[in-house]
Length: 544
Ligand code: GLC
Ligand code: CA
Picture (cartoon, rainbow, N blue to C red):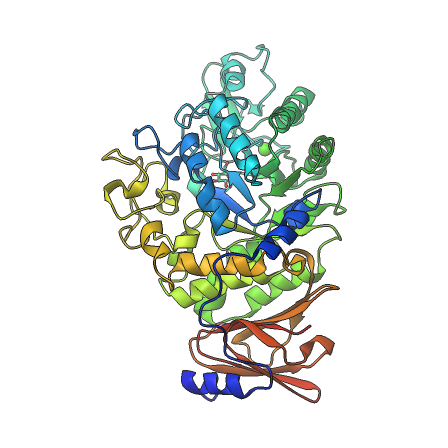
């Protein structure tokens, strides 16, 4: 591939019929017209297809009582920040009482609030404040297992005849013929069965031994957990993020999305459908997302696109487009009508995007653009908008590197806490990577995220428009078209730091359009369209 100097690429951009150089600085806020249109799109049952969702770890957002632990009043105080960023909904990682063996994914009471974070009144105040700003709230529903400190398990483990004796999965030996699976991963140990001396029996756990699996073959468990969902819906939450939902029921031949689990998910969806405008997103399998959607109407509204979200680093670090191309193609064609992808480049379970991008800002930005421009509801993991760096402290396990407190200011405590000891140390470089500094820097990651979200806002095409993958003849370029009845865009993202050129067959929407994001040139000659992209570059052209 011939190298094109950036200045030449720019000249090409200017000489192209309609590929003018982009405006120096794109707006960081949507126009009132965009906001009005966004309000319409975000009203009614389809709201989640047009939303941008922010994954918040309450513990690491903002501490208002000086104990070093973020809390619900703290998050409430940051709603204006989130609104200004362009967030329409917040997913709260677990907020329920917990012995904290798995960062709250070990729940001791499904109907109360972790006292570290506040009480039910603080939650209700948060919910009301979010709703007043037209921000929806999804809570994490962790149904596969409880904490071993949950009252049900305490009772279950006490004796074979207790009221909850059959609420968990028990065996006389550390195995069972009808359960053909072990722990979920090495993180959680090697042994999925732990001895309970009081019963002289073993209980089953896919995760840590402090997270016993509930027995979903017991109708009482099914009823109680569906009632838990009702409890939160009655409080007014807008839906759920469902933790490892595929693992609910086990069998001899499979433990992931077996027919009994699908039945349960349909029942859960039935519960949601009794309330207006609720939605749920599945923590889907890393390899296969489609089963979570069912018919498109009877299971999940959304499922995470982990094939892109957890593997984008391979595309950028190995130069292989295939991984991203295939993930997006499935989203384009492989899902039932009504299914909505949830795109992401980070979460509490993987390394910070900054680490995955190996500290290379352009890779991070290009990866985020793919997530924002593909056909999906984008999820932004807290701190991602700052390019938050990894931390080195460990309280629970190594995943804590991506769960460090938000850095709001440069000052000691970084505006997160007045305590000299935050619950977990800040990530690296928090005196540079914080809201205060980045707010004032037109080239910061925060400014970039604001521009991205402002750019998408109020355009239905990004959430629901068709996605057409383009087979560019240069594998360093990923390109696709997004279109609906109103408008169409061509998106091109480079996976390379060198200038790149490539051609695609020109289709109806491929006429050289106006450059509205980034920098590249698009020229159309006959049946072929040519893209000229500066090193590490990307662009969006409005082609209709
Ligand atoms: C999900 C959560 C993860 C947790 C596990 C067990 O994968 O995202 O953080 O450890 O479930 O609940
Ligand atoms: Ca299970």
